[in-house]
Image (cartoon, rainbow, N blue to C red; front, side, top):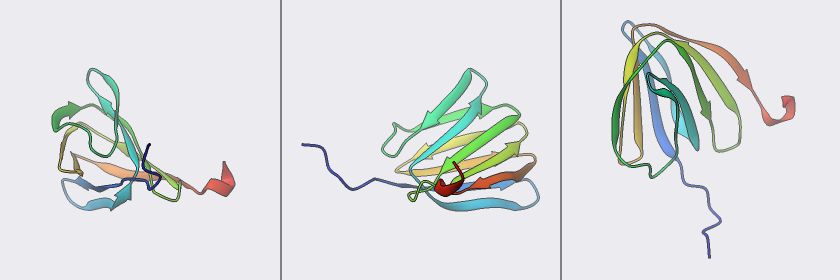
Length: 99
């Protein structure tokens, strides 16, 4: 039987000159060069280059954050995701009530 508790991962989004966001998430979508890529807790370790686009983070309470980012990379291992980009900014924050 599937476990009912949601698993989360730690997420840290950093630009070259400032931190952009950090916290817990249940999923993150990134603009990988090969196409959009979703990262969920317990994903296999991955290191990949990303292109300019939108990173979407879903928190455990289903709040959603969207960040415009430029080229960079992501590294995921042991439920820790690091998104390192040249530039990044928070463009949208919404709660489950707004959706």
